Length: 226
Image 1 (cartoon, one colour):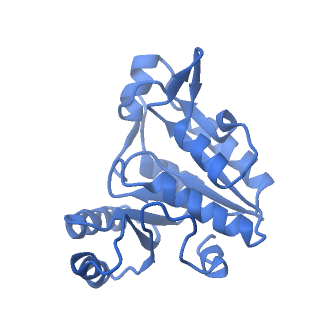
Image 2: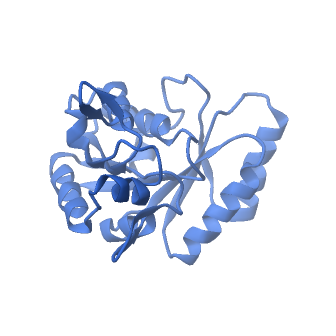
């Protein structure tokens, strides 16, 4: 039976796509049958009248999945705005059953499925006569989560607020990954200690810019999936 985990972040442009790719690459190189799925992507690239889902395309190439990028994402929007607004502008609202069906299809193909979220944890996916928040997708797919955060200034506040919100929503958090980490930076090392002390959740990996490998044992990484 396939195992999965959901990757969220403390905000937009934190680098969760980069981290997600490193995770899947790590598992695949260790012999795990690992794949990727993303329910909703906004801000897609437009090439020859086609929408290219940039996040999925990057993960596909970096982790050498060999999939068609458009097959990795259920909803792709051109407008680089929150998914709920992009859906409104483009007339293609998200249906939870479509997401669940696509997830089940991907889960049937891979033993370890990494699901990437959109934006930060408080992300409206649909907000009309039906309301879907990002947390609803996590709950419907019955997944635990990892939080990707920037290692730098301001991350203590961002991580603690994200964790507290997720705890209130009864979302399981397996760990935190710091991105844009700089070895020897006193503040960033302290940020790690403070985040762990204030949340009780471990920072399981430190990712530097341009890293080509996740500094985390593949078996320990695989154990986070459930």
